[in-house]
Length: 257
Ligand SMILES: [Zn+2]
Ligand SMILES: [Zn+2]
Image (cartoon, rainbow, N blue to C red):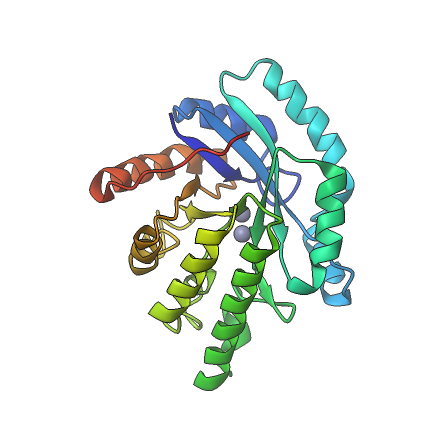
């Protein structure tokens, strides 16, 4: 039975919680994790960004927890109370304090920003030189390794997020992949096979094949997140995931929750 550890609800940028759970049931999953975005940084640009987006899980997780408990009453599958936290090495203390207090079923960690710049927003990097993009790539992988070594998270989401941005794509090297794989080998944190883009933009999984094969070289297990934001994304993404599992022989691990 497949578990999807990464979907979003209206507590961040997804759809109604109950719709997401119903869609996960219809997709034949064994369980679904509601992992809404959360940022606990006190730096001004990050505070402004969460205001702009209306990402308030640091304030609303108890309400969401009550909603999850209600949906569990008649859900045919397991429903996890999770979180996708923006990771920056400078926020480690704040993240640790928040996770200790909130006590989620598990936590997903994501490097979405470098120096408080969201790396998923293409026009931002248009005027950057190749050297600057290369440096940003270094910083991204440094942050990812720090995330893994922090031991704050059960899951590290979409480990090659830069590939999603055409302006930052293609700078990652085999050496980066080996560094990350070595960090995962030593950590409790499990990388995610993220299916957020499998039905568009050329249909790539994150990590993409070269990165995934380095992780497999190190026997690093991988867990699954469809990163769905809408109910109708869940079943088609899982159809593609099952196909990919058959093609690749990849085994997906379940969390101990
Ligand atoms: Zn993410
Ligand atoms: Zn996500």
